[in-house]
Image (cartoon, rainbow, N blue to C red; front, side, top):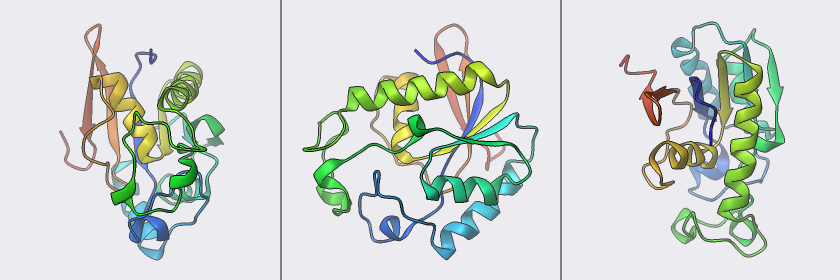
Length: 180
């Protein structure tokens, strides 16, 4: 169960493995020049008062946060790291297993989901208005909490969204780039 408090979320900018259409997972790879530009462009949509910018420990998330939200306190949490895809690290996305499948030598969906929800709850419990900069898989965990399934379109690189509780049980995820 995710603490029912609003927060902003943004996936990191493009990396070399993303550009090549490969699974990055726990592989620690930096942003491309395009990924850096995506992060800088996202800053226009992140103007606000953030209590903290929480990131994964992976360089692509930390670099994105530094470029998109400079001047705010940052905290890196291993619980927000991307899923360990085991033998699927670095393979083409077309060979990517289903999200609920456990990859050989990797992390199960349930272990990943528990880890991410625990990390998000720690952030939401400690800060009133957090911005989280992490990974596509972390966003899929949020979607599974909000909508019951990790399936759906991949969140774009450096595309900020607001995640808000609605009523007593529902969630709304809205783009910060489209002004809704």
